[in-house]
Length: 163
Image (cartoon, rainbow, N blue to C red):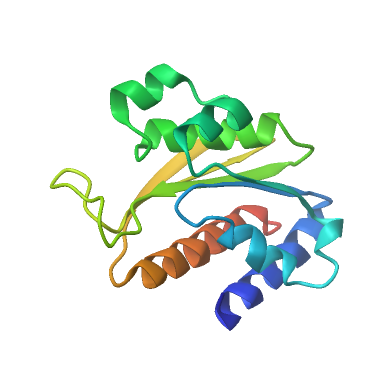
C-alpha cells in the first residue's frame, strides 16, 4: 500500500461522506488491496460497507453471484466478469457505490490475448448503470496490483465526488 493509495482513499471517503454514501469492493487480482487502502483511513467505518475478496472462480460464483456460464465462456479476466462482480457487490451489500477488479498480476498466467497486466475495473452506483474499463498496467506483480488499487480508488472518487 502506498501513501498515494491512502491519500486517494481519504479523498474518496470525504466525497462519500458528503453524499451520504457507502462503498463496497469486490477484488480478485488485488487480493484485498483496495479494502486495505480504505481501512487505513481513520473513520472509514462511516463510509466503507464491506469487501469481497473473490480470488477463486468458486468465490466469485458463491459470494457475488457471477454466473458460472460467464466464467466458462469468457473467463475470470473479462469485462463480463468484472461487470457481474460489481453488480454482485452492490446487490449483496448496503453500499451505494461498488468497484470490482479482476486481472492478471503476473508474473505468470498471461497469454497473447490476456497478457500480464491486463485488468478490468468495473464501477456501479445506485444511481448509474455499471461500466467497465480495460487497463494494461506494466511492471512487477506488486506494481500492477498497486496501479490497479490506485486506478480503482481514483475512478470511485471521480464518481463519488459531488458535481
